Structure formats: C-alpha cells, structure tokens
Length: 337
Ligand code: PEP
Ligand code: MN
Picture 1 (cartoon, protein in one colour):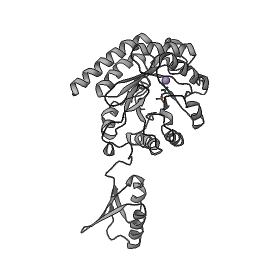
Picture 2 (tube, helix red, strand yellow; picture 1 turned 90 degrees about the vertical axis):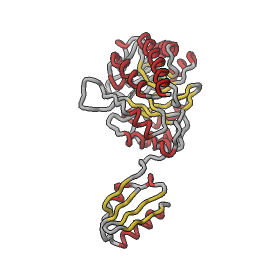
Picture 3 (cartoon, protein in one colour; picture 1 turned 60 degrees about the horizontal axis):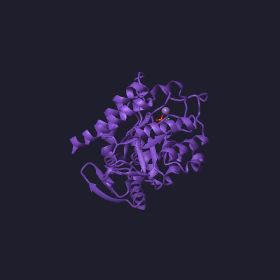
Picture 4 (cartoon, helix red, strand yellow; picture 1 turned 180 degrees about the horizontal axis):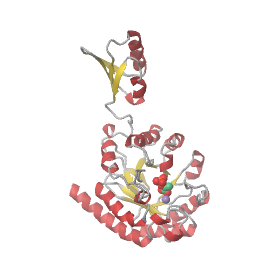
C-alpha cells in the first residue's frame, strides 16, 4: 500500500500515523520528494482500512497495490484450489455437474431426480430444504425433513449433496450435508460466513445479485479467514437494467475470477436466465469460457414445481445437455492444451 502525504504534514500527526502502523507490524519505507512525501507500507496491509487512512488530515491519497483479500488471492496461492467432495473433485481442470430440483418436495421426487441426473453424468445432487423466497406466502421449503430426503437420495445414488443454509441456527442440521450453499441473498451475511468458516465442510458461495467481484471475494475471505479454505464460487447472474431475463449472467466472472483467485468457479445458468430454454446456451457459453462446473435445476414435472419451475430442465433435456457439456469441455481443454 502506498500513502501519499500532503505537503508539509503536521509532524505530530505523522508520528502518530507511523507508530500506529508500526504497532500493526507494518514496515514503512519513506521517500521524501520535492513536493510530496510517500510512504511505502510493507507487511500484512489487508488488515488496514485504506479509506480510514485516506481520511486523515495529513494524507492526500492512498493506493492499494494488492487486493484487500489475502487467502482468496491468486497472487499468494498460484495453484488452482481443488475442493474434494467424496470422489468428486471441483476445480483443477474437471467439469463438475451439480443438478437437482430447486427445492426438495418429497422423498420420491428427489430420489427420482437424483437417479436421473446421475445417469446423465451429474456428480452432485442439489436441492433446497430451506428456501429464501421473495414472498413470505410462497413455499418456504420442507426444512429439516427435506435434508433427510436428500440423504436418502444420496444413499440411493451415491451422489454427494449440496443444499442451502440460511441461518447459523441451522448448522447442526447440516452436519451430514456434503457441501453447504450460501445463497445470493446471504452473500454478505457476515455472521453466517464466519460460522461456515469455523467448520470444515466445503462451502459454495453464490454471488450477491449486486455484488462486485471484490465484495464477493471479500465474502470468500470471511470464510477462509476462519480456517475453511474449501470455498467454491458460484456466479448466478446479477441485477441489471434488463428485465427480460431473471438476471444477467456475467460470464466475465470466469476469466476475471480465474485471474484474481485460485478458487473453483461454478456457473448457475438456471437462476441467471430464469427460463429453461436459456439454460443450454448459457451453460455452453460458461463451459467455453472455462468454468469448473455448473449448477443446474432439474425437475421431473416443472409445471408442478413448488419453486422455480420455469427455469427447470426436464431430466431428458438435462441428459442431452450434460452430454454436450462434457464433450465441449473436452474440446475446450484440447484447444487450450
Ligand atoms: C438456489 O440455488 O436455489 C437459490 C436460491 O439460488 P440464489 O441464491 O442464487 O438465488
Ligand atoms: Mn431455484
């Protein structure tokens, strides 16, 4: 971090800034120029609030050289992180297909869908038991019993399960879940992030609908700072002026995150487009862009789905798409080799 001082800074204030920085373990390289004095700060500057320093009377400007996230930063961890979930590996060149209903509706429904998506090449089963719905009158999910149905589906198929946790109080219920999903609406629920950071299960962190990459990575940093480095990022579309699609899929997220972070990148084309007929194109685009996997909603009877029916694929459509995606992924890998 570089701190540019105003001309003729008050010496008492400068002294107190320098000793405050030194107390924090920061080494300071001072360069006195004709017009300006510049302080080069070396050490763990991620703990410093650049805005706070910039607001001091003696400070003209502050420039960060490194991003404020450290654990998630590729600069400090050049190799891709590979998150292991049972026999499934997320990241590091493979393509993980996570598929299943938006919400778990019954044991029979989730087991039927789990068998179908597994037969098509999915290696993880998704399904919400606790649902963050815009309307309090809409189906809120089956709750704890929904988690039991997911576990039955796992027993029947061997597929690991990923499901959304909405509140810290639910953590004990999630002890047998394989991957905890933090939804878009909770991306900045910092207490929730801290709680999942203190445990070891992998966490799939969805992008908040108006979150910048930096805000998203700072949320990943919350989880990692607690000791849990098994974080997977999921782009699920952001809010823009466009209303035709449910959200706008930001495919730039794949190359941008690839550059900024070592964490695996998953694309959710279902919540991005909000329409089942968009899922193929968005998924193909995401694989071509180099994502590590997709999370796709699949329902055996979308017209009767209790949640997100319009964006769910039928199992036969998922089967065709999965075949195309796995082939495309191989092609992209060969082209990049
Ligand atoms: C979901 O995956 O079911 C979900 C609610 O997604 P998001 O948090 O991206 O809206
Ligand atoms: Mn959904």
